[in-house]
Length: 343
Image 1: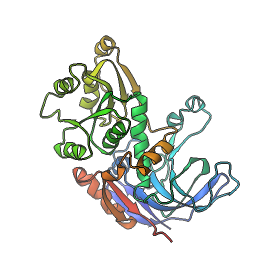
Image 2: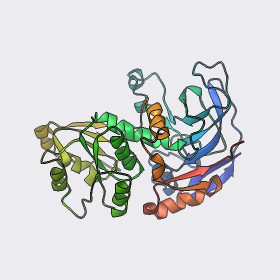
Image 3: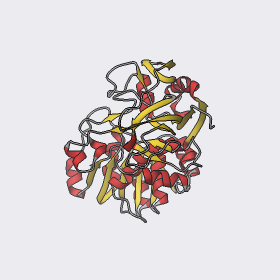
Image 4: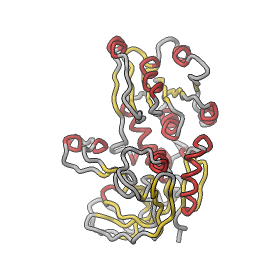
């Protein structure tokens, strides 16, 4: 079978891979669609610190049809089911797993990062980590459930409530999906980014407020929007030093902050301000138990996630698109590759 492999920094190709064998507790999935994540691009670029060695098959935003499975499994997964893969492999035994926080497993393995991924024609995956999707859900939309899970987990982490304002820093795929998710739950998102084109895109998605901190006093603008209070919630989705630091300024006294982005190094923060405002700051990693919610939001159109799709290509163009995303990141949000035709 064919798969997409990154062989080293700046090197990706369609390669021949052995067909997967079904193991006990696993299913074989015929991959129909897979989208490129920023993590895949950083792996291609050679800057993903979590990738220990090359070559590696990339991909973790993946959807397909169950090709082979033990039909007596307790999860109700049958041959022919349309599914999306939950790509975060956890041990089930460590402390966070025992608390239901499988997204923070001490030995977590993400497909395409810590082990070979699912951007290939067929993939073997644990049955209990397959999530059913409606049979009539368009294939190019199904992989978007995974990034939406990350976005929704950020909203849940900061306990966003209807009617509250939330500043979302970073108008990439995660930030834009979070903005649409906030709208679906009747909150008021404010998208913050230094790229005007991304902010214009946010407006076209129905995001009511946008702020460019490179061109205006972002904290003052947010105070104006919130009538001097600051935002009840803040979700940092850029991973930039300035983005993380600014959460303390945007948040209201007793505000709630979710850190979703991954900074490349340690960041110094004024803890006296955190104490003064009694800010509640929490990390927000991946997601746990939110796939069904994400699938429903996309399927019902409550979150029109397809708006972030920049291009749909045949799978053999994915290596080229990795280079495009690396060289021209501002031109794309989400690229989806199609692996098989129906029937």
